[in-house]
Length: 513
Image 1: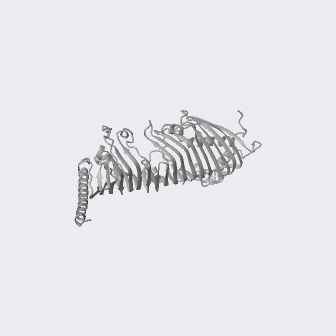
Image 2: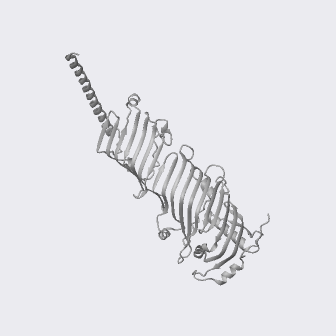
Image 3: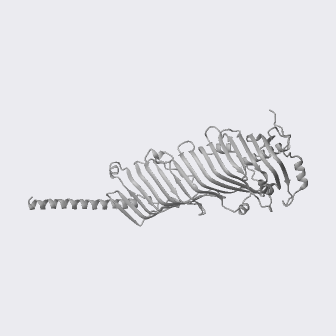
């Protein structure tokens, strides 16, 4: 090839490269200028957005802001982030229709503080539909923090270590009409230690949380009263329990949440609670709370939520209950240990009975069972409870009886069975019991000695285990009127009290139908 022809081709090639470079530089400058202009002119004036630096890449459709901060209208929200990166901006939809299609939005170490304000009842939501379509293939948050402050500046919620991924986000005129104004695909949320102010007296914490569309997990879950037992009593006008609940792991399986129906809808296939430990303390020296206490039928029925949980499993749990009945007497726990339980068909708007089956040990020695069923849709709030206790060494409950009732017992309960059926107003039941050498001991007021006279009187009416059927059982029956300002468990307890009195002081025969 002649030298002059080679030179001409080289010049053309160099010229093309220079033109491409110049075009690229021009495009980059144009793109960067447009981005900076948009950040100045398109961001609403009432949003104070600042950043240290902006970098762009026209060829990859990338925009990156560093050291970003801003706040929402009315100072309701403050926002900071190490960086915000938008990547994969597609030009063809933008040039054709003005639609925005983005490959990814990444927020690095965002910190959001939300300030709770008084609700503005006069303002109305702007439901105008967007004229363009917006698509984001992947939205990601790395190591974020969220904090909610009340009007006094106190934290009501704090979530740390937020790592969140959401895919296939769509926003257009159709989605804008929905309660959640955008559609989305899969998601994954992971957080570290979090705190929530549940009420003026209780809070919730958990060590970490994992959520996907198919499963969820909370670890080191805590629900606890904010104050000590003594301090809580000082702050109360009427009785309110002191709570201390810890759960190693809460696992969720196949859950679904929908806001588009008449009521918010939540369906969960399975919940598993591993090693829950729950201590409840009540100061009976305070005035009674005389408000009406709903039975669980009504409490579920009145939920502003369409709830359906197919199965709840409780594994290796423990419950301790104590109450202070005298100023100078230290209370002791009534304990249920080794609790394994299942709750089936838990619902607020569904059909059929909620079924609860519990297996435990009373005071760590007597195997105890409880089968409890009720229909939330039953307006009479009917329920049925069946239970049993076997091989119970009654002396193990003496610390609780001593502090609460000023009494002790001797003897063993070999087998006890009871059935209770009731409603909002009254209940009735039957009990049968096999026991031996059972004796009540009534203590003096200071709990330091035996009141021999009262002990003799009580045991005069108590059968020690004779007058039984051929299998060694004595029988009792009872009816109870409900005190509606007391809880369901108080209702259950007075039924059992009446059943024990009937069984141990009655004639011992099975009631004829």
